[in-house]
Every structure is written in structure tokens, then in C-alpha cells.
Length: 153
Image (cartoon, rainbow, N blue to C red; front, side):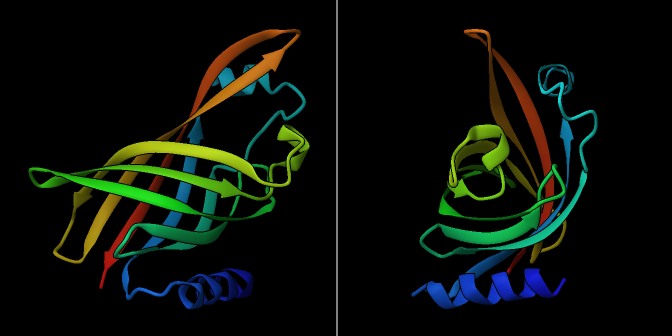
């Protein structure tokens, strides 16, 4: 928990804009293909607590425990479009904590989803992160479903 609070404070200090919302990461669900294609990992941690921040301009940063049980930090950009009472959300970030899978210190991640209001300040965030697996020259697509809560300020 101390790590997540530290990461939140760093992400808040790094922004020049006032905070527009906090994102509380709650968990993920992996499509069957992510289990089948990622055979060296028999199970994932699907309760992935963390916290993030999105500025008024859409700059985002945060930290969470990833599905491998490792600490991940991320930074990037989020775009939001209002669709009636809900919002469409697309994020593009660079994340740490996936080096054993991607062979990169910073792994690019893209997600798309929706935010549905619970109250005036709180919303449920549900988004999908596509994952491409490459084995023996063949590429296959899987998906990770992410669930969180956002809090506006």
C-alpha cells in the first residue's frame, strides 16, 4: 500500500494541471486465449489493486500490482468522449513490470472502454486491453478486461 501511495504522490507532483480524477484499479479478467498462449504462466493474479491519476488535459500516471504479481507503473495519455450519460475512454500508456513477457523495460499498452456514473463524483470504469501473442511466427489475439472506479475532483 505504501508503494501505491508513493506512486500516486509522484504522479500528482509530475502534473502541471489540477487533478481531474483518481482511478482506483480493482482487477482484471483474462480471456482464455491469454491462458492458452501464455502457457508458462499457469495462473494470473486477477485482483490487481492500484491507483492512478488523470489530469484535466488527459495526462495519466499511476501504479498497480499487475497480473504477474509484479509492481507496475505507467504513464501516458487518456482521451474521453461523452456518450450520453456514459463516457468512451481510450488510453495509450507505457508500463513497467512486463519485461519477462515483452523483453522491453517499457511496454506500450492501449485500452478502450467506458465509464458509467454511479454518483456525480464516482464512476465504474471497464476497459479492454488487447494482447498479441507471437509463437513460432504465428500471431494470435487475446484480451484483458480491466475494472476500476474513478473519482472526480
